[in-house]
Length: 556
Image (cartoon, rainbow, N blue to C red; front, side, top):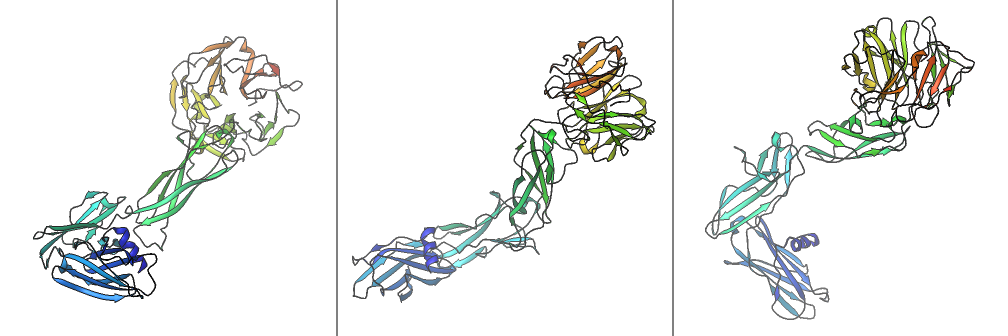
């Protein structure tokens, strides 16, 4: 009773009363009429109205009294049928206190046009929505004349044409409903009296939609995992006791670019992802519901990027010694400005004698760690990871390339790319695709590098975040080509002369730990020189890295 009384007050369908005397027993009288249901009167007593006060309720319309009752309750009702549509109702209540005091209150007149309105239910077997109440014919006869009834369905606020062959309170589900809200109103008009009303069911949730929350869990730092967490909040239609099955997958993005092969909800952040922004695009599906497509918040990874060495796991590049007639690859751990040449590590699981070319390749598989790239005698190209696994990244045909340039990120996506020079002189750029290997090659220079003696990338030599090239020419000049982010280069700048005696040029990474990319050069005497980068594409004074340990040309 108390709940109904509160509802009547909140709905505003009742009218306040004016007391007929001044016994101070009744503060307010609220009154409502709902057709095919009841007329209801609610008394709000004065704060000091004594217990045991009785209330006599009387309801009437133009034809006379419709019902009466006496009770100690402050709420009373009487039945009202649809035939009373358009009639004017009043309610009167007389309060009698135990001490004999009385007070009578009468409501303002109220025209009966309201219906008891239910929500919208859905039946999966028939795939139909139905307004639960009222169910009225298109016309019915009332005491004061015919009442015409129209049901008006709306989809996302736009009117929907009635469904042929179905009652007005029913709507058959269609594809156009998916993802949109539905509502229905019932309009009643009595031409003889001018009485009319429109009552609405309210809107459904979006049809065929599972509402979810999407958050990220984990620590945003290199070496840690982050996860896109999906939680179901609600769904419609469907039983609220049966949670829909939701299958979700994700695509991770770095600086707005999709990470190849990173399609799970979880992602391990590596050291090359420092100072980038990560974000996941999450897609979920559930039978009977629309697909979900959401984005997580952007995650800023702190720190400066660092390429972890292949074998030792630090930031200093190793020196590899390889000879085609050996079964093993010797790895020498990097030290600041030099290498541990006294303690080579034999790695028999790395490339074997079938390989005719090998090089450090940068982060080819997008895990933040250096890879090796090797070409075998059949012309296939392989990538070797620190986990000693190899993946073929190029089928046959690579033996037609007379020079491979590896180890640089030329597009700024934190994945290593590769250049190959054909025997006819064209330089072909192959963008790195992380776990998916290499993208399609494109010719970026038809003849510019045809006469180049050696081509090497030491990474980002000028501090703009993009890898660059250094080229040794037959006359001994060393030229710097600044990368432009798409595999092409700016005009060359000569940064050295007298380089004709150098038999090998290698990326030094940041061997002297000053934050700038360095170059390694092997001369004819087997001396391996470190040329520290100056951050502008050139180099400062060199230093020897292998005193007492002459090296051959089979170093990488």
